[in-house]
Length: 369
Image 1 (cartoon, rainbow, N blue to C red):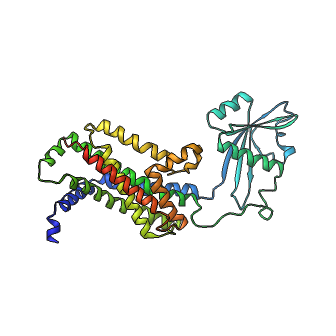
Image 2 (image 1 turned 120 degrees about the vertical axis):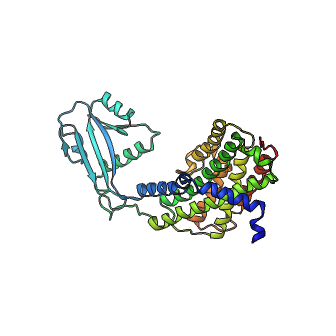
Image 3 (image 1 turned 30 degrees about the vertical axis):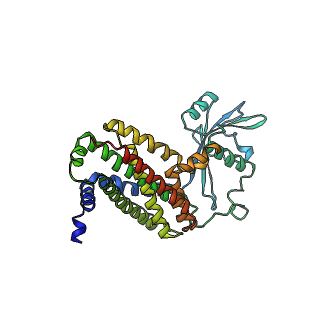
């Protein structure tokens, strides 16, 4: 034990750990903030509150104020002269509430442009016309629900005749999809900013020049930074999972040991990438730009908050090659699909190899002063 404490790598690791934990801001943003994000998003997407939609209505040759949907089964419960609320009860899919606001055509178009409404419904002598952006998924949802209700108002309110049966399997909720993504997103952010920015800041302050003058093995300094970040990421992931289990009953359905090894491989991959990014930059402003340039595309493309399958088919092959995509897909499969060793063997090996290659290239061109 005494020999271990006197080892250079141990001393560097312990020093890096103390430098990290002595800053309250690091503990908050690195550990507590992701927990608060996961809880907030989980609560937002797991509540059974009503779905509320605002619809602008326009009548051509209007015969009267309350006549817009009378012939289509919509109750005429106007609030004042220009507003109507239609509440539809559905025990299967949750309640829906439509807010109809009567308007003229120019004002309705302005409401769509401002995001105040998703659909314009025009009643003419020929019938109803729906106007909306076909590329807006929310507008498509409003159109489908409203048009179906107008054709058959009782279809949503009678659960005995409904053909929709809600799934109760573990792993199909949005929060089940979100938590693994938040864990990997926190892992990437902690390493890219903790390692890359830490190296660049030390270089800009001439601290690396002083350290390299000591009898220190250069690789030990970088490995020590990696080990501290792996430890911090393990604690952060454990905290997120604990609160997700406590509040949302999230379970790990696959092999826990495979999960730990894949998690370690992801840390190695991002550490190698962080060292490569920061290998020569001496200005913090330039380093911040490089870190964002690496991190932001993966945050948007790798399926952290929504599935990357929403992107065009031709781009999916490239997206799957991103390290954040590989580690997120692997961890998500262990959490929600019961994946084991063989299912995550390829991403584990690929991430480890990617990290080691980046580490070697970064070390080769590393600028200490």
